[in-house]
Image (cartoon, rainbow, N blue to C red):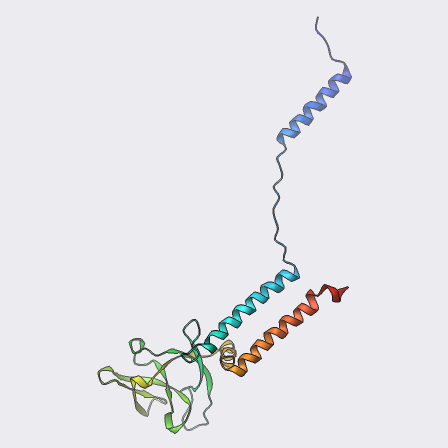
Length: 202
């Protein structure tokens, strides 16, 4: 004789089967770890960048070679040859790198010191190279040619410096470096005081 299930038993069996099917289909949820950038994290990131920048401007100050930075460039004050000799001449901060005769061609610009009985750097264009004689002709205005010994040229003109280059040049001497260092410390101190200091908020 066949045993029949009562209505209550049948309902309970259906519920168990449904719960079992749902459990098999259910997959564990993957939790994604989100990186939270709070104010303290951002502050320490900015502090790390500031420390790297301070190291970058410190090395040229303590090392020789006329303040040449880690990228092989330096900044000096010179008179660019984009001006006319018969007008008032202005000095600019220019970006340079060490002179190499093998990297020089006619038309390139070099830095010449003491032109026209002055005590400043001048940007001049190379007109002719006589490497066998150890000399070259340069010109400031394109008309007057001057002969200069190759061994007396130390820098090659790259471009007029940007605002960042001007700041970098300022920090290449001790006074400017101390001002730059103080500015970094002041800015980081203000950020910490107004945004990080929990005691002040309480």
